[in-house]
Image (cartoon, rainbow, N blue to C red; front, side, top):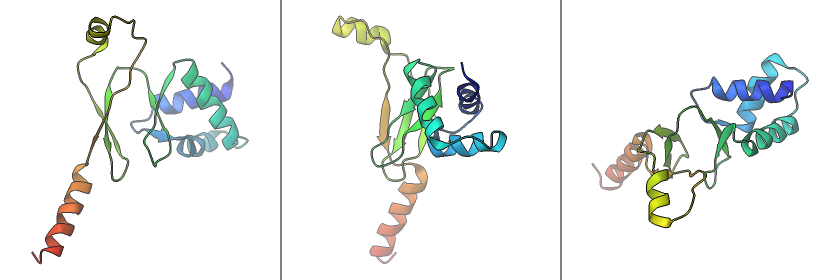
Length: 131
């Protein structure tokens, strides 16, 4: 594995957030002043294709990248795009049993409103109602 790819993988694996390519680039620039954004995108694509990281796509927001250590799913706020990890039962065996196919992997993203957005929307309704 090339040095840039190793550093990018380390950045993602050490992060508690779901980083965008731009955020990965900013972290990489801290230790590698020669890094360019195109290199980050290329390495992220390669790491994803090799199954070393997860890519989480949220419509209307930049792709985010996540570590592969522990199988988990995501809550995705439809308003602000925030991601929250959730630990649910692994559905691989059930999917295989129900469909009769061999499941290589799956990603489960559950759409919801995060507490902040839900509160902001509720506050807006209260103001409209004069409360």
